[in-house]
Length: 120
Image (cartoon, rainbow, N blue to C red; front, side):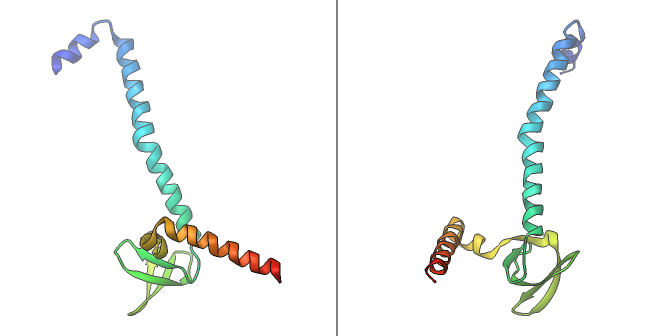
């Protein structure tokens, strides 16, 4: 391994810099950028949660949001009310249980509601 680095020093320095640059760009697009995108989605999800939403916490606890506070949520469970940090909320319960079916069902319910409102 050492011989490879010693051979690389002898005149092919610009090629080594180009390879290092390509590796950095590859790491950025394969690791850093997707992680930043995931963190942004997670933050938006946690900021848009409302009272009454059923959620699943990272610990696996299921409950309903009873209060939204600056630093966290008060989650109502079968055993009572507990306070958790915003980062502890993993996903919505309906989404975790039913996946994409819940989203399409919500859209169809919204369409029916707007249709009945127009008829009135």
